[in-house]
Image (cartoon, rainbow, N blue to C red; front, top):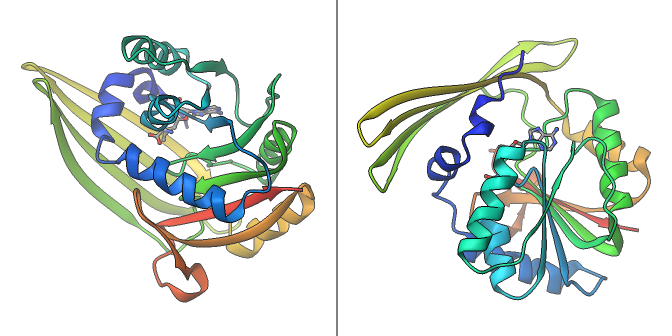
Length: 258
Ligand SMILES: C[S@@+](CC[C@H](N)C(=O)[O-])C[C@H]1O[C@@H](n2cnc3c(N)ncnc32)[C@H](O)[C@@H]1O
């Protein structure tokens, strides 16, 4: 079951998730590159970019910025914001499970648990697409891939900007052992200068067990697995590999193109 209507509401989506700090994230990318990249980085690719506060910050810092998303509404919004801010951001409308870039990137990233393949075949096809779009020695940074199949989650938060209030509810519920599926539901309850609206995104997704994740990276064969660590939205902890922490839901994974 899929309802993508939230992803057709870029402004409300951006307000809902505006608790992230793109400056801190871009600083962290810089540190990660210094420490792990074997490629000189001038071109960044944000996969499933949405309104991409990150690319706007990266473009501001003088790098080439490319945003890839399936939804034209998200990309149109990103282009509009880039234009308003005087920034150059390229956009590509494509399926992250099957794409090729004309000009390869040196650093690719995917944020906010957006890597949510519904099958191992799709996951492999995604890795092949990223590998074909990334220069050798370049990094692929993955934030919050779902590794914890024991989790049942529900959280709610409210953000406000310019007379628009967005109350977001995120729910995740285990579904089936054999197919390793779980149901995810995201609800935005919006009050836009008094006008009330409600948007829902519901999808059945597949857990990737941690060992399975590593095996799939091996099966793809084009990346080195550099590690996985605790990392919430803005702060990433290289002193805390996942083997040492209890909560796997705030994680980041780092791959390097061979
Ligand atoms: C959870 S949002 C993340 C947006 C943004 N990167 C962030 O961190 O806030 C997921 C994004 O993925 C896009 N998306 C969903 N399925 C996709 C697919 N198969 N290929 C590319 N983008 C996809 C949606 O349009 C949406 O913008």
